Length: 200
Image (tube, rainbow, N blue to C red; front, top):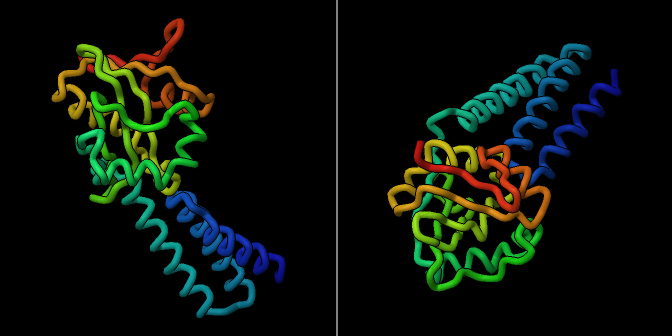
């Protein structure tokens, strides 16, 4: 019986170490359910009630996290805007993991700040070539990588690209993780690049 309590405690502690919001909620949910079982084995009504409430809150927030109307957005921004440059500098080490060749936006780049619930969650930067946008950076902060921002951006959110005059996105991933991510959100592989058509 004590083993169940130790497992529950370990899961709760592990959830507090998570940097991903979704993973934190999932691990915390599992931990609270195990604590409910532990409370039933004791038996201890306060442990059961407290952790049942925690499980309910985790389920509530996870439901909101994966709701189709989640408040996700993409806001055009000047490539030399101080806010964007500061954001990129703040996350330079993490960005280099997926985009080792990216340094800074160029003056002619098309740039977006990706948002979640109205707060900055990432950035996208590309080089326009007629109606094609060559992606140079597609970055989402670690805490929000499970929030389906990419699925939204390259799905229902593609209007931000078409309204800017683009009908095709092209990427040449510099890391296997980035290639896998882009394929998962709808890009198709050609001989030397990944492409996503935005019109029909």
